[in-house]
Image 1 (spheres, one colour):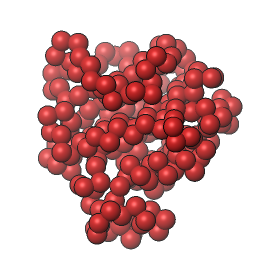
Image 2 (cartoon, rainbow, N blue to C red; image 1 turned 45 degrees about the vertical axis):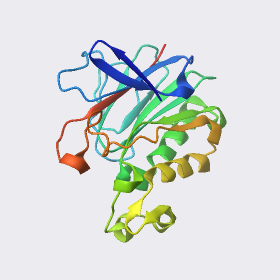
Image 3 (cartoon, rainbow, N blue to C red; image 1 turned 90 degrees about the vertical axis):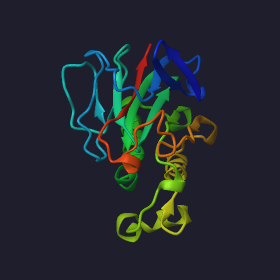
Length: 216
């Protein structure tokens, strides 16, 4: 990822989205920074609903949104959870998706791709999917994983009770037909980078980082 700044505001951008028709950023920890009202947020519920958005007039109870409307900025609040930006450069569609471990269990990425296919006729092979900083495998402990995770997740255990949610996400995306070369996973852990990221697992605070994306 590329690190950028404007004054005291810092953010990260994905390599795969450079020079594409989408502006985006993973904004780093800054207690004094707020986004303007023109940014569209969601009432995130750790589910698998991804809303179709055409304007800023409605706040959705969903864990993300998709749109073909240009200059409509979709925002996701997050700490240890994954945020994925889906972008089709052929049909000019974007989606931003929040996926905690519950979202991965419910396969919100599958819901997103199926909806993009059904509503916008997106071909998964054309999708670019970028997943930002999130909980790293070394701190991703699930002592009750046999009750919380489906059995096909168990192969992603890196040591007793610890799982690579990054590898689970990549597996799910590839199963949906997204090309490996079109998947960028930041590989940056939120738990072990307290200067840049909030982490509920680390400090139990309720503050959040923000990721945005918009077609241009």
